[in-house]
Length: 243
Picture 1: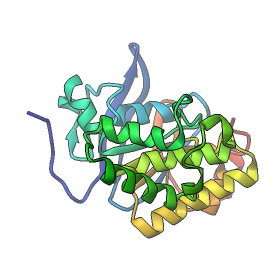
Picture 2 (picture 1 turned 30 degrees about the vertical axis):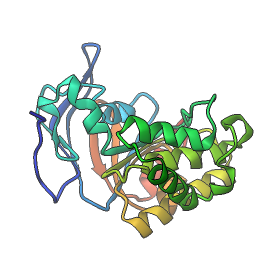
Picture 3 (picture 1 turned 45 degrees about the vertical axis):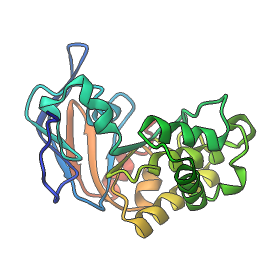
Picture 4 (picture 1 turned 120 degrees about the horizontal axis):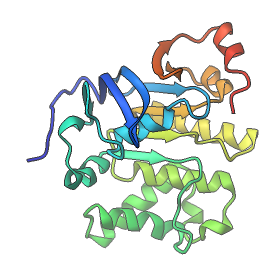
């Protein structure tokens, strides 16, 4: 039996969760929620625990305390065999793209569809071109990843993340390997997808210029805690030299 909690009003809900990795307490008492269609940021310095929260949400780090619900799954009761089912409802975009370098853009996306149960070749092809259209990469479907710029690779990674119409998009430092102009183009793409398709986005970043330009609710990780905060000059100054 898959451990599910049906609550249409929440995509993510963590209450008093201690995040422990390799017997080390990373964050204690983490509590926040994400509603359908929201854009939420996790900000903080490198090593503050932001990515550990992402790993909790995809079932990579197990939850032993508090309450943890993601896309209808109860993470406290999640078993290893349930993790693939959980991840089919979550799209993830990484800083380093994580594309299959020996496969073309089209085949990278086809691989995801095949591993998540798609069988009809015509339907798969139609879906792949739909998402490539959304990210402006249809005319590069035949290219290999090494033939693409960093920004183009990230657009393919975004296409991959939305292939199965996930309930949640987790985005971990999506502009960390990109120049400023390319990074802004990627953020404009996220904003367009969020606005036009109602995507629910939880984004990890230490780039406060992005947070200011594309506002959302903010949770700041640091000193073993993850707490809500408002964007104001003090926060911008405090976070100015994050790396």
